[in-house]
Amino acid sequence: MFETFKLHNYRGFSEFELTGLGRVNLLVGANNSGKTSILEAVGLLASGGDLRRLWSSMRSRGEWIFHERTRGQETGLALPYLFHGYHVDLGSAITLEAQRSDGERVSSRLEVVVPPDEYPRQWRQGRNFRRRYADDGDGDGDRAELRPLLGCLDIKVDSTVTQKLPISEGWGIALHDFIDLTTARGGKTEEAVPVRIITTAAMAPDELVEIVDRIQLTEEESHVLEALQIVDKRITQFRPTVARATNPQMFGFGANRYGVILRLEGHPTVLPIGTLGDGAWRILGLALGLTAAKGGVLLVDEIDTGLHYTVMEKMWRLILEMAERLDVQIFATSHSRDCYESLAAIADPQAPERSRVTIQRIEPARPRAVSFSEQDIINAAQRGIEVR
Amino acid sequence: MRAGDHPRLLLVEGETERRLLPELLEANGVVWSKDEVPVYIEPMGGFDKFWRDGVIRTHLKAARREAVGLIFDADQLEDRRWKTAVSKCRSFAELPALPPAEGWIGASTAEGPRFGVWMMPDNQSRGYLETFLHFLVRDSDDPLYQHAKNAVQGALERNAAFDPIRGRDKAEIHTLLAWQQEPGKQLHDAIKHRVLHPESDLAAPFVTWFRTLFEL
Image 1 (tube, rainbow over the protein chains, first blue to last red):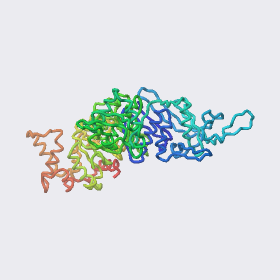
Image 2 (image 1 turned 90 degrees about the vertical axis):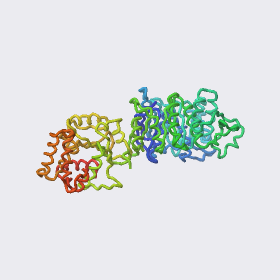
Image 3 (image 1 turned 90 degrees about the horizontal axis):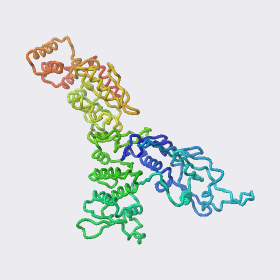
Image 4 (image 1 turned 120 degrees about the horizontal axis):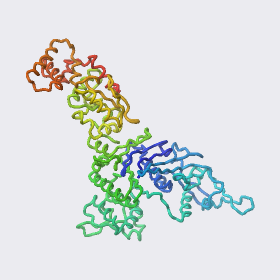
């Protein structure tokens, strides 16, 4: 578990630090204070600097580059958006570091360096660049790499460079370079620590169903059922539905809560989970995300989305219990007062020095979050102290 | 606005302070509107309650908080209470070992709001809020004032129930107020109607402390 977390030069922050972290950490702060960026940065460090996990959120924000190449198109991740001040050049670096509760320090550094003289094989194999290869004229039959590269992004985990990614024009990293890396590693995505993200749009159905499938008949299934029962006590069973697999077209368009069916007490028919509304899906996503993030980190943006204030206390209780059992550290964001006041219900006034639950207020002008311990959270809820 | 929300918060021992201080400060030029108080005054219910559950530290962390002040009575052993304050505040503020005559104002933790402490009556002597009120008596040579003091002493000699040490200052003030044109006035009214004299030089250090802490 991270006890402190620090970043340099990432997005809107030249420096930022979280301290006094616990198992469940709620990030609060004004709109645009950078809460989501910090979640992203924590995920990046926990996953060993794996930029690929940023791809879908960067794409949805329009932070990508696009080039017409002679043979097709190239899309990729636009680096400048990740660097503070949108400024990238040779030598620019982002550092992420954390102190773990066991005393260990972990760090990750993304640095723009001069590309190596000898480009790695997988770079030279980039599909869309074949036409650009040409005989370099020295008669040995090798094709010289003619890729226009502005630099190379070295990703270091602790002191070892674990990835080198080519930076193309516009300071972008082409998507296929990430894919090539995957193949180079035998098609496996190695994660330093399992990291799961749930965005404001809730967990993607495919991912959710995959996890539901995986937990069928395991011990976790009963805990996830308890989670669902927070939203509707009558739920007695849940299953992934095979129908989805055979009719992807039918479920593709506009359907965003599909793939799971439920049995309700006293109800003769089987119901699709979508019938129950957003809250059920959201809680299911949280419970499954926790399951999938075992031993690692779960990031949840806008954790109270779709949840009525009356279920929030139960949600927190469930989350803390599952997180402790599965050894997951959670970072969540919220704007809502109900959300953090309900945290007080699970906070323990007799909490030992190290809090299980914390609130971290992000203020753009301050390089360090204001950290609320369990005792602070209780005081704030009892006395109406504004933490946001 | 609740205590929790206001950018400027003053924690006091009880209701008497809460009602009296606005009158005192307003008479000294601090505009005090009921709808939008410049400082939220929160009675804690006694000296010991200040230090429960780390409440002050939480108050200092509140969003958009600019300043937090504490006012408590020195009581009879003035260095004991100050020492308690020093020790309890240590995790977020460094109070000096000896209380300064002008009251203390300083920073709280790194980048925290301003934090101030005033020990009634004047950071130096034993006493209470009511001791401070004695400073506001218009003319200490006033024979009526002397008479009030004598009367209180006389009452004690006749086994009056109030605490001879803790209650004397309070009894004397209330006795004096009982003999005014409109007898039986409450303390804050006494200030409002200038039976007590809020612009007294002796009150000035407190007013200055308050205005400096809260930038008013």
